[in-house]
Image (cartoon, helix red, strand yellow):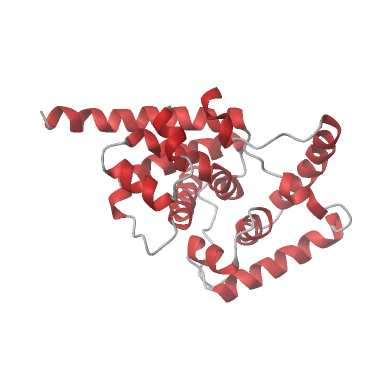
Length: 229
């Protein structure tokens, strides 16, 4: 726990270096730091909260298994988003063969990682509007929903979204413009700051995903420890 707290303020690159240097427990920092973006990327594709958590867990395990392949010239968050998108699309293809993938044409000890909850009245109001936004975004066609989620709700730049989804920047701009047009009539008067309240990945769910991934990491590490003896 002390090592986690001491390393909590380190940039991603330094945390990754320490994980690769024999401190796998520090991977928890990366998960808690990027859970919101990873959840939103997964949720925008699978459109189901439970399935999104499954995607997250596998995406983190995939990222951990291939962490040495991460190239520091890219942002870790972008690399992680790309892994999540691929995992979510693979799961969706497996479960729903009629879906077509968009083409290029278009724990208590971690309290310091958590943000303060708003007062109950504001929280209830934000939740109501957030649910309205979630329903509206879910109704968007696949090609536009993920772009809208990452650009408008997660707040990524056009370049970050394009890199994460492996699209051209013009395609991202076009899809975002069309997504906004589709949503405008329904939620123009109610969106405002409510988009920031939508698709929240709260502490309890964060803890559940982190715990599951750490178990998976421990299972990956056990054979390595045995063979090194």
